[in-house]
Structures are given as structure tokens and as C-alpha cells.
Length: 318
Image (cartoon, rainbow, N blue to C red; front, side, top):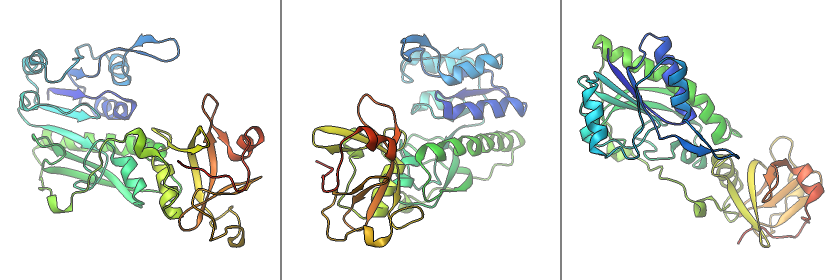
């Protein structure tokens, strides 16, 4: 079977490696261009390119734009049976239609829920307790193709987007191999997506990351962990932008007792800033357990408060 694998970030690496281990080594890989990365701005390959080179895959396609006619021609010249897409760009029909047995994508949600660029983040921000991965055949409208298979996974009540991402990489890799195997054996049975059940998961911008203190404590907690570690929830203390990475709903385990959480404090008010950092919300309060000030390292709340002046009664937010 002639497979072209398309992917760029670390999320896609286990899928490529699992395919190789299962005897489905791709004939070629399409990935992002080599870029300047890291502190020294050294030109380095993408995580997928590194993994492909380690597996002895020599044919590498690295277009600046997937809409480039030369890219479509290069893919067609390789005569792929299958194109497997994991965390790559949106492909035009001229590219994915070259696969004689179909082109499929791995998506980080249980479609049609959370269609879009940031499904993990939005699922957590919305308070979901379950997510998963879906493979589906590509069609022109993004994330709407016929579903091949789904795999489910739970979301812990304090789990961050980064932690879900890392577990999902492995689950997704297993789904990619199962999908290729079904295509190879001719056992695929697809189901169409119900558009009436679709929910959006659009790209997240900086302004979306501001912490909404006026909302309930569970909503604020979900916002913080759903954006951790990237792009990162933030809030203002006077003119300083603080990034928030971990939190708990006050009143849960290891947080202050209920009588330490005044119900009449304005949202964003610092309630405690000693051995715990507790902030009032529109309903209830959250304990911030890990945060960062500009130009500094991420710290536990205790270590942060040892070097930053924050006192009960201070207000956070714009």
C-alpha cells in the first residue's frame, strides 16, 4: 500500500511511528518547511520530518503553501493509495483526490462535536468530561467528511489541555493504524456526520484567553486548564499581565474551607495571598496553583507570592 503521511507537530509523530511499526511505512511525508526555532534560532526540521528521517523515509514534501500547484503535482506523481493527515494544513481537493483509496484525517474530538482548529482546548473550556479522536474521509468542507472510526477518552476534572493532548497522541496513533488497516482490508464502514449536532472549536486568539472572573468558579477553572500550557490564560494585575496555568475550584480537596470564600467579593478580588492564592469569581472562587509573571519562570503559587506583591483585596482583570 502506497501511503503518504502528512503532519507537522509532535502530536503527529506517534501516528507516523505506529504506522511504521505496523508495517505501513509511508512512501513519503509531507510536512512544514524547516524553520528557525529555539533560543539560537537555528534552522531545524519539524518533529514529523525528524521522525521520518529516523525511520528511513527519504521522500519529503515541504511546501510553503499546500495550494501550490507544484505540491499537488508532486503528490500525484507519487501515486498514493492512501493519504493519512494528522495535524497538517487544510488540503485542497487537488491534493487529497489523488489518493486512489481515499484520504483521511485524524481529528481531536468526537465529531461532529468541536469542529475546528482547537478541539482539545474548547472541549475542556466547555467543561466536557469526555472527548476522543475521529478519523474521517476528507471532503471540501472542513471536518465534515464521513466518519471511519471513533475512539473515546475521559477528561479529568483538573486535567489540562496539555495533558489531554499527550494522552490523545497515543490514542490517535492507534486510530490511524486501525483506519489504514480497515482501508487496506476493505472493511471500512463509514457513517455520515449529523450537522445538527456540530459545535465549533475555532482558532484561539489572545483576547479569547483573558480570564473571565465574572463567570462561575467551575467556568473559570475550565478556562484556565483548557488553555494550559498554550496559549495560556491570562489576567491583569494593575499593568502586569499574569499567565495562569493551574487552578482548582475553591471548596474542593486541598482548597480553603467554605467560610474562607466570601460570597460578596467582586469578581477578580484576591481573597487569600498567603500559602494559597484564592480569587473570587462571579459565583464561588478558584485557587490558582501555578502562574507566571512576564519574563519569569512558571512557579507554584507559594513561590510566586514569595517574590510578587499581591495582597487580599487587590483586583485582577481589566
